[in-house]
Amino acid sequence: MKKRAWIMAILMAGALAAGCGGASKDTMSAASVTEEAGAYENEAWDDVAEDGAVTAESGIEIPTNTSQKLIKTVTLNMETREFETVLSGIQAKVTETGGYTETSEVNGTSYYGRGNRSAWLTLRIPADKLDTFITTVSGLGNVTSKSESVDDITLQYVDTESHKQALETEQERLLTLMEQAENMDDIIKIETRLSEIRYELQRYESTLRTYDNQVSYSTVNISLYEVDRESAPEKQSFASELKTRLADNLYHIGQGLRSFAIWFLASLPYIAILAAAAFVIIKIVRKIVWKKPIFHKKEEPKE
Image (tube, rainbow, N blue to C red; front, top):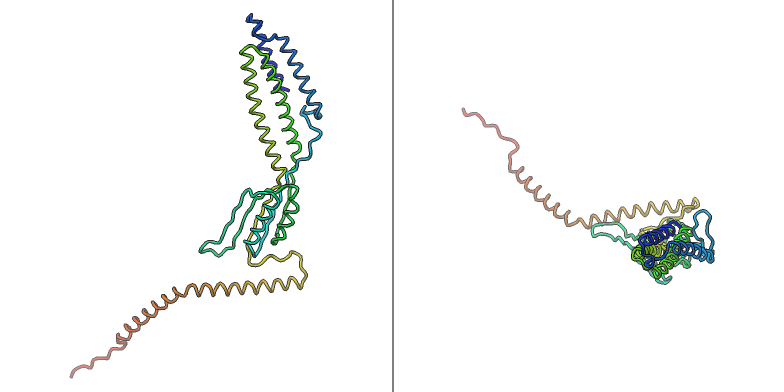
């Protein structure tokens, strides 16, 4: 409303200035501008009233046919012993549902490292296929944690859409006034406002496209970790927990022996070199010690 009043004030000022200058046939009269401004206001709000309601607080149109706009986000933390298989399965399911991968990061084992692989994926999945996708992917590995969030942007969407419609109505009216204007000053002022409207329309349209994408495609964040043993369920019976603990201890002992064996066998070349060097040093030391007399015979005095 303020923007509309502002542009009408400019046009009225331009018409009055032209009238004072004596060039009555070069511009619209102040009365005609005022009349058109009033007609513009009435027509604009009549058009708005046809498609929706206007709030008493903000004066912004709220279309009655706007559906609820929800942005859904799901986060999964998963572990698996078959890293490549699960990762390929996730990507295949993304393609099958018509989604796409927004970001992907996979960390592998370095040459000297002993860590397992991991992957972080940000996926965009059609909202109507989200539940099916989550169910299928959860069955590919062991899900250690899961979280869901829903962001309702209905009010923001309606507000943006209403501003866009109001600007489009204002743009149409200014184009009509542009055709009627004969004074260059009025034309420049109208063109300036039209340029501002075009910029604002582009901004609102970009925002609406972003909202539409976020609503139509839900976001799924997946953290996938390769493990040697998958985590046990949180709730177990006494016998099951005892069995799990014993199995874990035996597993860790086995892993320790395995690591020692690998280290020992891999270090054999160094051990052989050190053993050879130690053997040579010992031989040299023993030879030196044997040549050196330990006791000196006392010389008998000559008579």
